[in-house]
Image 1 (cartoon, rainbow, N blue to C red):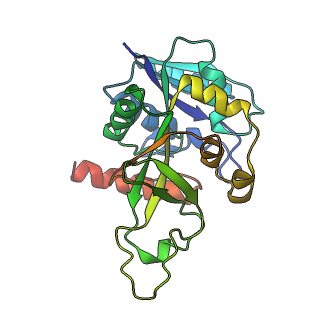
Image 2: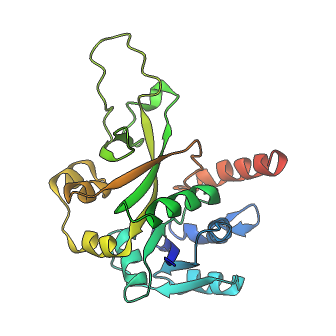
Length: 251
């Protein structure tokens, strides 16, 4: 049976929020929220927290959650993808689900859906996107737009408002999709990806997934309504706590 693991890259040195993995959210360190959510996924054979900091490692190991382990990685990785690749190198793993370490509300069902897609062997990678329903977000560079074909295969990702609507007044609803930064990789494709230097598109947009497309990656985009929340700054902690309270009230 295909062995699929979830890997959570969790570094200490975040530029905007140093040490955010251990930031307290509703009484728990953020990394604990992420680990517990990922562990609820039913199609994973294990969970690895890939970190460069002993404080994060000690926190995760102290949780003593069955099926969860820590991999200590180098501190100089340029991206979370490189950190994940080091964590799984040499292991008997067929596929990897990359769950960002700052997503305390990640949906376990979405993880399972991505695991199911990558387990078919038909795709090199899989990721997710949610419909954009607020027109103001279309031109926002921090909101990455995903374009994919009728089979769900990724065509391009951009910070620009793509596709461009030429005729004013054309209905834009259902056209724009916001990329969600969760990825499934075949292990062999992950190794291929991190061995390649950034491509021109990646350097321009600062979007690592464009390197995969430049290599001819068959990447499936899964449609979802779930967006969660990325805790990028200290101000995001209060937003995450409010969403968690809402989930407890309306599960």
